[in-house]
Length: 292
Image (cartoon, rainbow, N blue to C red; front, side):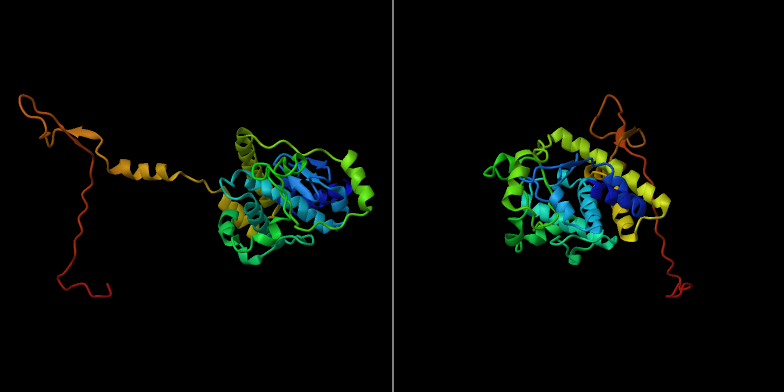
């Protein structure tokens, strides 16, 4: 825990944007049976202490920021009907590329492909169809997609940043001791309401963290552009279409041109809207040259 605390403090001082996000994730030691490396459910940061001890201080900063960015980008709420394992892989590639560009050091085995630079997880996902076979069996499982695994393995949404965890010291005896009493059990999965509420909360945290970093002058260019894109207001296409359609729709009545659909004995107005007549005049007298 001391190593994690020191890494978190270093992030707050050197990279306040990431540090502010990491502060939002309480750290909790997890049972090695379901969490061999690190994980998050958008509520906490879960870790295997043996895995953390095997990393350098710089790599610990990376894993903290990695899980925090998963939450800040609402990866837990954006999967939709996508296949879980490929989605985890796409999210890792999207997050890790940002962290490497920001100067952090990835741990051994982290999924990094700079060919996906600037792409979101949704954009990366379709590109992984032919290379899905080999790495996916090393990812942790989502209980919604894999009911064949035991409950300890499948509860909670975990995001493992490294396909291969470093070897653990102590052999089988150490592992048995950890399974018996060490670390917390896997968290319960998010309900739909929790998923929606957490997504809103993390978007607010993302905006707040970006503001803090900008004020400190410590938000990198690549990260700043990415955050700016994420925080741009997104309007539903139906609202945009309705705005243009309503502008040309007839929504008022006028006696200037009486209605022809109703006859005697009364005169009724027709349905019309205010209109602006536009006239285009072309000067063909020869006083205007071609360049003009």
